Amino acid sequence: MQAQPALLSVYPLIRRALPIAAWAAALLGSAAHAAITVTPASVSAGMATLTLNSSSAGTGSWVLLQSGSCGSAAQTQAGLDGAGAAAYSKGSLALAANTNGNYTVRRLAHSQAYTVCATNGSDTASASFSTQAMAVFNNPAWQVVGTAGFSAGGADYQSLAFAPDGTPYVAYQDRGNGRKTTVMRFDGTAWQVVGTAGFSAGGADYQSLAFAPDGTPYVAYSDSGNGVRTTVMRFDGATWEAVGTAGFSAGGASYQSLAFAPDGTPYVAYQDVGNTSMTTVMRWNGTAWQVVGTAGFSAFDAFYQSLAFAPDGTPYVAYTDNGNGSKTTVMRFDGTAWQTVGTAGFSADAADYQSLAFAPDGTPYVAYKDYGNSSKTTVMRLIGTASAPTGLAAVAGNGAVTLSWTAPASNGGSAIQSYTVTGTPVGGGATVSCPATAPATTCTVPGLTNGLAYTFTVTATNAAGTSSASTSATATPQWSQSGMTLPGGGSADVQVGAPPGCTIANAQFGTTVPAGAPAGASTPRGVLSFTASGAGCDNATLSVRINYPAGSLSGLQPYKFGPASAGAAPTWFPHGVVVGDSVTYSVTDNGVGDNDTQLGSIVDPFAPLLLAAGPSGAVSIPTMSEWG
Image (cartoon, rainbow, N blue to C red):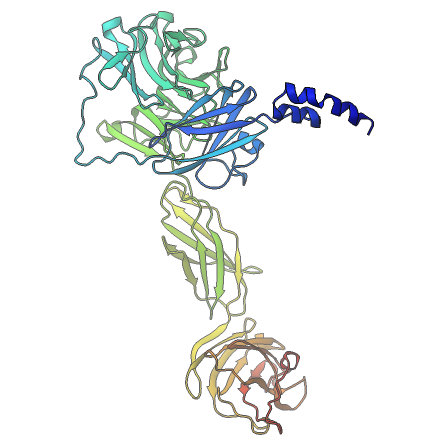
């Protein structure tokens, strides 16, 4: 308390010297948070630029969500939403304090609402936007952009990309300028050289053009001016400059393919002549180019490399695989090593000129020249088995169980063709099953043993194979009969739960009332009777459920004919529970309610009685304990 006057004495100085947020932090003895904002801009049908601004320097991280809500700063940094699920897309960029940083997100779905969540590691921000509808082409026709044949001379290895503002750029080998690299852009009227025409040190092949998330154009190529090795250059707004060392690959290189990771890091894939012409991928770490995984990681020599990033930031590369009949192979980097995606050499025959890209939903597609189809073009996409169906429910019937479920959350990229329900008796026994052709999500398993519990699961099958099984559901089929005619009109449904080997027969609603009913009582819904016999009935307790027409039990009381206790003389006694329009009760072999003294044989008269009015005109109503 003695410190308060001293603190208050410096308050005017703090208040005059500092902004509100700063003097509040000083007064409270805690550091102020580093605020962050995020603003979507330049939103098109498939692309949007995110502008992040933080009051402190550091790394800005963002995620895009199509559904769900933003999570904590740590979740956003990890590429997750508020529920801990992987976000639709993610990325990061370096931020200077109080300075806008731009990140252009590509491969968005058109006419789609997105939420962007951003963080600087401490504070978070969010914003929403919707992409535009894509163009609709009625009576489509191709039109020249600018002037046909606009390059200065002959040209090869064209590579096309769009700037964040939608401007088309093209890089190529410029035979009009010593076969060096030239990049041009379309200004809306004509094609203009970006920087200097033929800016590479020497002749160049296999140009690959890409834009960094901040909008800077980069180009990779095989650099004859530097030992035919790989060079990457970037345009700084005035001139083209090498990124790192020109000719940085270990040896000669061809088929360069350039792409950017979500954090803005440039990667380049190529045929690495310095590693027996196998595939190598390298990344720029801000200081030097370093190998991703192992140099020359393909199993054999490879050609026509094409590099792309999945929405989760995983790099994939496609190529002609000479170790597998010159067919197409795709590999992905798992953070430690390169792994084959699907089957190595998956194309039908030899293939060249692979081009790899990801759909907005994250599905990889690859196009190639298909020698197995008259050297025509083929496009393939990756599919997998569906996720497991969910919500399996089992409804028991008479010697059957009807199953229903919800379709898998993911079909694995391929339409679900069919479902298969599989069941086994609890405790072991023969497997039972039923099929369903999609889109149906229900089927009935017949031929089951009444009174025996079965456990069921369901799987989904698509072109890639069969999913894992769903969670299980258990049901016990029971004898049942629907639409049994009632005396006086209407019908009822009856179900009898009995163990296996206890057979139900002779079920009916009749008008014959065994002697001994309460004086003046009547049976407006008739008397249910059935027999049960077989070894499974020995000392068994059967459960019975009767569903009557709506409102037909009003004023009636459930009564059973038989012994009210084991060994007692048969009589009518209150027995059962009424819930709505249903009655449930039990009967035990040679026990309560069984009107047959033979072991393993049950006779079961039952009726809801309309009791006569008492002396005061009131009817005595059994309590639930009396019914049961």
